[in-house]
Length: 124
Image 1 (cartoon, one colour):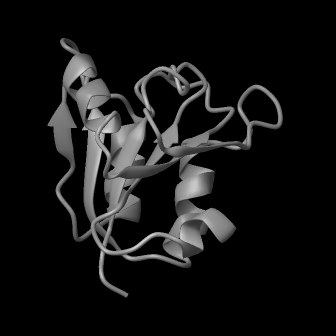
Image 2: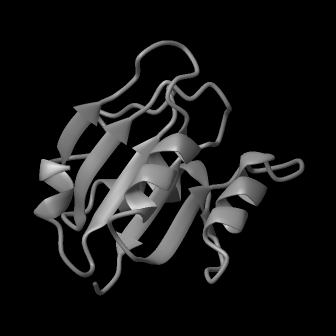
């Protein structure tokens, strides 16, 4: 919560699944590892905790290049009902996560693939 309290409007938070290359694809962002065990906590567990303390103005997902949407996207949409998920391919997502606006990167124990979520902090 200390790291979250230092964020402001327009700053970004990455909530990453257990497969995300956090060190190499988050540049200078503060990094926090909350993975307790495989599968815990999930990205949606962390999102739920964050939604209690911040407003989200934009949400971006890493979209697979083919096939159906991952099931977790429906969970994200349900948790962020006023937002349309912005979709980027893997490399476009990585490019967004190395920009200076990414201020916090949280590694989870999430096992579902493509369960990475990049959120932009809105106004209080």
